[in-house]
Amino acid sequence: MATVAHIGYGYWGKNIARNFAELGLLGAIVDPHPASAEAGAKAHSVKAAAFEDVLNDPAIDGVSIAAPAELHYKLASAALNAGKHVFVEKPLTINVGEAEALCALAARSGLTLVVGHLLQYHPIYVKLRQMVEAGELGRLQYVYSNRQSLGKFRREENVLWSFAPHDISMILGLVGEEPHHVSAQGSVAYTPSVADMVTMQMHFPQGVSAHVQTCWMHPFKEQKLVVIGEKASAVFEDSLADWDQKLLLYPHTIDTSGPVPLPTKADAVPIAVARSEPLKAECQHFADCIDGKTTARTDGAEGTRVLRVLDRAERALAENLKLQTAAKAG
Image 1 (cartoon, rainbow, N blue to C red):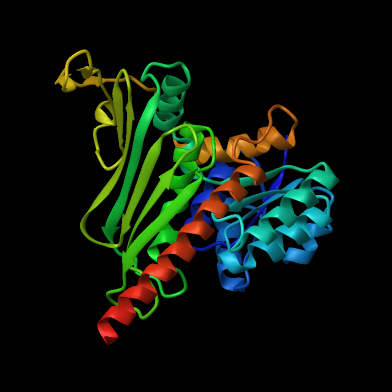
Image 2 (cartoon, rainbow, N blue to C red):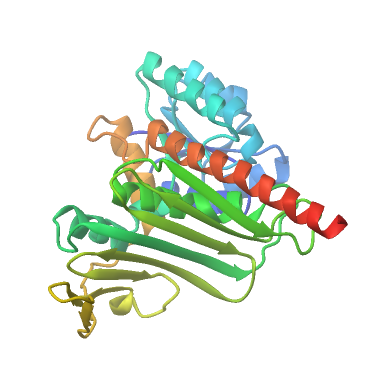
C-alpha cells in the first residue's frame, strides 16, 4: 500500500491530508510554517517533516502538493527527480512550458503525475460522462458551465485562473478534443488588473460550442454544468443540497422536418447516482496509480490541455481589458 507525504497544510491542504489519513496512506506533513506542520502531524498521528527529508525517505512513495501555484513546478520537479509519484493541485503549473517539462520528466522517470481536477472524480460528473460516451444525449451541440459565488477575492490570480480550471477540465473531458478557438471577456471591479468576472468561449473542431461563466461578485453560489445534445440534455447542479436532484436528464426533442424547428418539452428525469466524496476518490485514485492498479485519469497531459486553454483565454482577456481601458481613456 502506498505511503504519501502531503505538502501544504493550508485551507484546502487540510482536506487532502485528512482524506489520505482516512485511507491509511498519510505518512508525513510538510509545511513552511512549523506550527502548521506540527498541527497537521498531531491531528493525523504522523510526523512533521522537512521537504528534503521526505524526498530522501525511501518509505515515502508519493507526495501530494497543495502549495501556491507558482511553487508547483519547483516542488513537483524536485519530487519527480527524487523518484516520488506526484499529485499536484490545480493548476498543474502557471505556464504551459513548465507543465510540458513536468510531463516529460514523469514519463522519463516512469512515475505517476496526477493533477487535482477534483470534479473529474465527482460521482455525478462520472455518471454524466458515461451517459455522453454511451450516446444517451446524442451528438453534443453546446456545453456551458457557471461557477459563481461571493468571494473569496484574490489579488495574486484572477477569477478565471481561480475558478475555471475545473470547468475547462470537465468540458474537455466531455467533448474529447481541444478547442480550435478560445475567446474571453471580463471586468475589473476591485483590485487593479485582477478580473472579478470572466466569460470565456470555446469552439471545437467537431462543431461543439461551450462557454464558462466565472464571477466572485455573485450574490449567491452557483455551480452548474449544462450539456445539450441532439437527443437530450443533462444538467449537473452542484449548488443544490438535495443529492437526488443534482443530475437531471431533459429528454426534450426537436422536430426538424418542417420549415422551422419545433421543440417538444419533456419532464426532467432525475438520474440516480451513488453518493461518495470526490476528494476521497481522487486520493484513492492516486494511490491506485502508484500501486499500478490503474492509469491516471487526470494525468499531466490532461492538466496541460487545461493550461493551454487557460493561457489562450488569459491572452484574449488581457486584450479585451486593454481595449476597455483605452475606451475609458478616450
